[in-house]
Length: 240
Image (cartoon, rainbow, N blue to C red; front, side, top):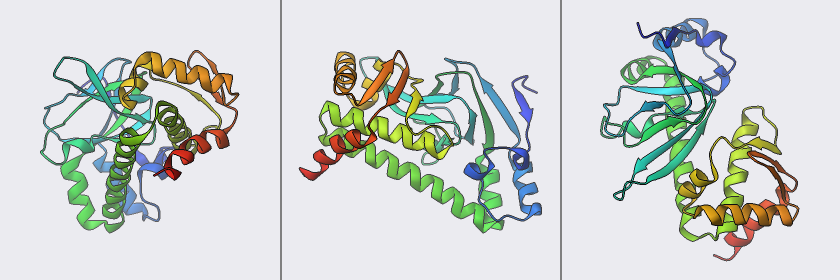
């Protein structure tokens, strides 16, 4: 057995509400416990799965933070997303039974391994699980669509404001502060994700600081005015 894998029990997990459908019977929870076979620990900078690797499992992130990325033709890494504790990663592999990106840990992380064939099998018996899986997939599609809209038409300020609002809202869902966050990714990675140059990201952060919208201390960001960020994003949407 891989030294980095540990048997888990979903029934004792503090992220259970985020990963599992509510209202299951004890017997059904036990079945899901049996399905989620192991946990894997990934060191910072380590890879959970590679682009082109055979798809076998979805992963629920218990602790830590990931980025997904693909190598562009000129060898650069294009960041396609950031995933945090309480979110599910690996959905990209469902379509062609192969992963379409690399998933890299931005800090030490731990994931629960959920073999996809077992999820499908169990979903047929536990309809609540089936609709829950569909909901997770749908949420991911909506998020991706939102990102594409964001990249399609927004100026740098609007992109960064939307990014910060999205991050804070996702963290808040998981019980974290609505105004303070630690950026697990570099400015460069944010730029890659938002389609902005590194200096543009830095300049835009500085502008937000000068305008009294955020305070920034290295990777610590404190949002002083959520409303100001929302106005930046909504002004843009009102123009279309």
